[in-house]
Amino acid sequence: MIHKPTHSDGSRKNQIPSLERGALITVLLLAGLLHAGPAQAQEDSRTVVRPSDTGGALVNPDMGWTMHYYSNIPKNYGSHLAPGDTADYWPGLSTVYLRVPWAMIEPEEGNFNWAMLDTPAQRWISKGRKVAFRITTSENWMRFATPEWVKNAGAKGTYYEFGKGPVENGAHWDPNFGDPVFLGKLERFLAAMAARYDGNPDVAFVDVGSFGLWGEGHTFMSSQIPDEVADKIVRQHIDLYVKYFPLTRLAISDDVVGHEKPGRHFPLTDYAISKGVTLRDDSILVQPAPRSWHHAEMAQEFWPKWPVILEHEHYGPSKQKGAWSAELLLKSVEDYHASYMSIHWNPRVEFDENRDLIDQINRRIGYRLQPRELIWPTKIAIGERFRVESVWANAGVAPCYPGGFMTLTLKDSQGAMISVLSDESLNMRDLGVGSPGKSPLTSHVSEFIVGLNGPITPPGAYDVYVSVGRRDGTPVIALPLTGDDGQRRYKVGKIILGELSVVPREGDLIQGNNDAIYYIHEGKRCYIPSEKIFNDMGFDWEKIKIAESALKALPPGPDVCSPMKPYRTAMDGDLIQARGPVYLIRNGVRCHVPNMEIFKRNGFSADNIIMISEEDEQAIPQGTALE
Image 1 (cartoon, helix red, strand yellow):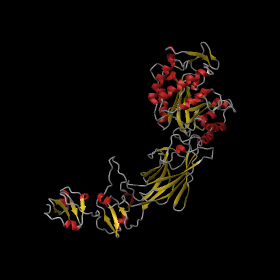
Image 2: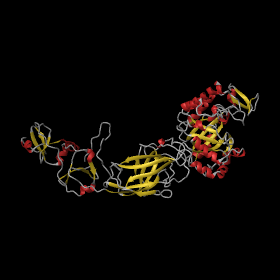
Image 3: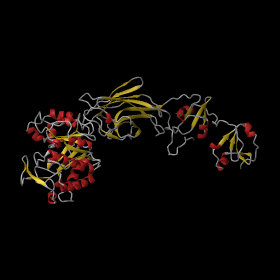
Image 4: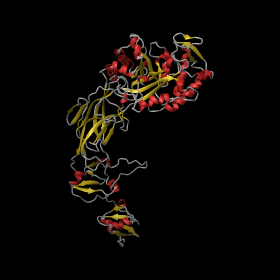
């Protein structure tokens, strides 16, 4: 059997297609089941499917609801949950958020209380969710949020009264956030934290939370550091986090520039952008309208690059102050192009009182990839290219930050994968976003080949699934479709694989179910015995067709031989052949090779036979046959 030459790098360029042991295959893609059924039609031998959005919540990377298990005070709000309760009833909950003072994690220098973080984190991670952190150094409900041992080591600081500012022997202590002793101890803590969590795939983000009250980047209610001093210090803190968390999404509070300053560009946030740090706003619905938030304009610099994180005021106090508004919370998602929103209260209470709002937010928060239309030919041949037309939309408010690529997967009735067809030419990260109901549409054409060189694909009916994920076809992104196979592939139709009828013509090169290749001549199939003969005849490797049934319909003809060339002077060791026997040139005479056993025993190869004319053969004296 022939194999096309293997190159020096080990690759097999333009290898002869050695396709499934069946025959050429046609594909008929039929209807699948989606929410309310996809709209479908047959148009000029094409199948058209228009899937419907289920309207359900999606849990995807870089987006979702964040459950405040610790909101500075450890009892807020995980204390409302039993150990086994991960608020699974909340649709779209993707992340457990742990915000606690440094003093609780490192109560003694070098002795860490990681269990405080890892225990709740693992409860959510075991459910396929992620964790996010903020470690604070200033709180208004405890005297030393920064461990007291840091102060005792010589770090300078200020006592204050909450809301009044610096007061001698005040109830709370802020470090001088730029003090060298403080920064040195903080750096060692961040290094220890990063050793555990940087690059951890279960960590969604880490806040730059070591400056200001509650980690929000402001001190106007505490130690009241002047803005011109704070600017330099905040940059130092950003640099520490960037140094130790290079593989983790970092976020910083909008309040580092002032909690109510309007505007799009500020030196500190521009610096954060230059370091790859995204934005969070912890002050949504803290005050009644029209002061419900202040930095949506600032967010416009961040959301095209990275996910923006929103935190609404503690739900109970927000209601008490008359600041809570379902309409405004939804509007904040739109205005900030937010990817995350907080659950900032007893989750059961907040859920029960805001069910419709949660559903509305879920349909817009982050990204929401929709395959609006899929069109494919009803019949394709295995080993030959075919086109799939698709129309995609992102119905969310933010880009699909992790990116992703469309894959079509064929499965049999047992759920086994028959063919995985991934298209790397459209990255879902590039889909635009729009206002509700006005998402821009992106049309795309993919080219696929089913079964080229394998695997073996018997004829039959197969299910077709669409997914979005890695380049290798691994699904990553949840889509708002029904028919999920449990691995984020969604059934959109069926495929019928059938044999393609090929009518052989003079000069065709046809391969059957194995590597044997035949040349069609005068209505017969003529075997090509070697790669050398294939090349000598000037055949084109790209023109081989795969059709076992066509070969069976043709009678056999003579084997193809290399074209005859004038024979040079006979040399010992030549293998020659005219129309009949094979001879070995030895001592200037031709010695007959009487059978295949002797041929093989002498280590001869058919690739080395030189085809000559009968006249040239007769001109060489005949010697004794080989034994």
